[in-house]
Image 1 (spheres, rainbow, N blue to C red):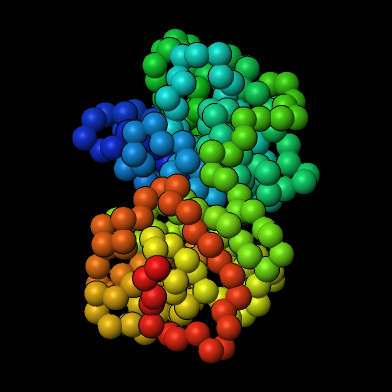
Image 2 (image 1 turned 90 degrees about the vertical axis):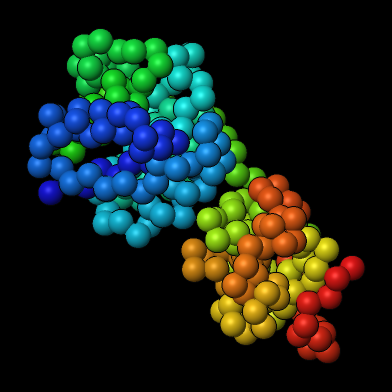
Length: 270
């Protein structure tokens, strides 16, 4: 049984997601459809790219991901389908798929150019329903990448920047703020430990915080830098919103460095 996972900024108030699911059910009735999220901020390709990057490894290999956050719909931007690390990714060529495609040196990507794998009438404002959903459904029922269109060797870059490394110091930024107000950075914990050691200090929002393991290692209402569950360092407030209390937002600079043993464990404001 094939799995098709959907990620959009469509919300659930209107019929848009349901229409995509209807198209998929018509073409591939035995496919299982899973919703990742439909609450990505409107047109926020960076949030979509990061969400897809973080969530997709939890799915079985062979899962088909349809990511439609597409402010350029109707323009000359391409539609893509690619296979990377055993997963299939479908969506617009606007950077949303890039972090996942870039992670596999043997990635194969095709342009969605075959009208046989699209709906007969393609709306210029709803490619999610008319191009991307049919592509995913046809892939789920046994399609091959080569049938969708010509090979693609480059695509729009990721809207999520990678951290820069200067010796044992990593310069990154907040990449995503979740509904709890946790500020998830673009600094992978594994990379930080490789470059700066196992004892780390995180600087963000005017604070220097030792990297800890869970929220209640600090008192309620206090800030804490954590080993995030998604493999990236995050800044949080125990029982509160780091975004609100510390003024953290997507793009806020973050610095990660090795922590000297003599540093105090309490946060310091600069």
